[in-house]
Length: 397
Ligand SMILES: Cc1cc2nc3c(=O)[nH]c(=O)nc-3n(C[C@H](O)[C@H](O)[C@H](O)COP(=O)(O)O)c2cc1C
Image (cartoon, rainbow, N blue to C red; front, top):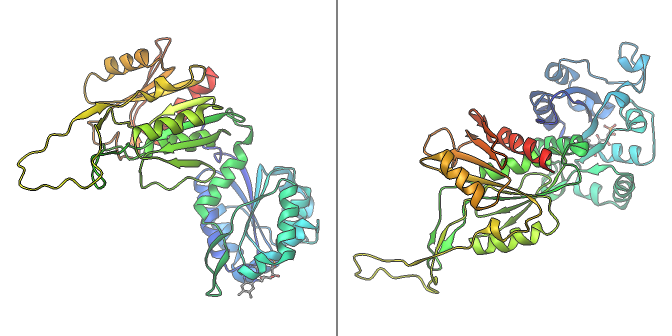
């Protein structure tokens, strides 16, 4: 299973908001990710953008009216409602929210929404007072109570120049909302997956840490892949520059000991643990409470003590996947790790090659399972590697 957007049928409703220009970017991202995209523009949206923009992006006719004799809807006015795997309205005006909340069907978008059985996502975009108005809030609550997803809006600078809650979510986040809606029947639906990511930091004193080169990218990619197969996902992350992906809870920790506590707490009700973090094997014994002064010393000796093994501390009855970052004898060392740590699967990689491992967006791993199965994956995007791992995990569950 891969990106759920591939070959999906998505309908994008565009309404009359200044955020319309971002809808073109959203459409482009959905199409590039593999969705078959239909666009419906409201009267309001037509004041802001020309339908040619969306026709050129989607390579399909754009619906601009319920009563256009040239449109597919003239022959079958609920065609898009039936065809869609998901419908996203972005930007969603106050007017569009009100119409949907009260079941109006006087325009192509409203009629499609009323007839749809597919999941529906609204991405509101409006002036903060319009959004906070009791009428809009009641409409939002009404839609939420019917299972509609309201994605955003965010706080931020609005077209009016004011700062407030009313900014449409960025297109990349909305694409992820569509993925989440599409993955609700995925092979990990109803499962909880815990992923550790990043390199732990072990303090020497209040300003210095001992750490490693892990960027967290591999763990975050596995987490996105699990989310896109319907799992509820928690990432326990050591410090990294990566933002929390849409729909994934990220718990930030620093040290191996903090990671151990957080992973164990999260695994209490989890089905799967993927340890993609580079956990420090050693930590300075007894961090100084004040900054170590260099004085006139020519050298410094730091005594290190062993960190506990996180995987070994976790419940035995869940599927456990480990990563082995090796610089030599990759297969032998990884097999040793599989056995010693009682893992169900190990993903081994040689971190000395430039195109793989730490910091890179790609990885080349060998998957080894308990039954002696060895699968060598070529150079792949880390998200793809995540899916290969989860293909095996899904079979083990
Ligand atoms: C310049 C301009 C910007 C607007 N921006 C928004 C907006 O961001 N959100 C909104 O709900 N309405 C906005 N409106 C008002 C809507 O366009 C208006 O309510 C329209 O009837 C919406 O129709 P529709 O929902 O059918 O597209 C704006 C109007 C103008 C003239």
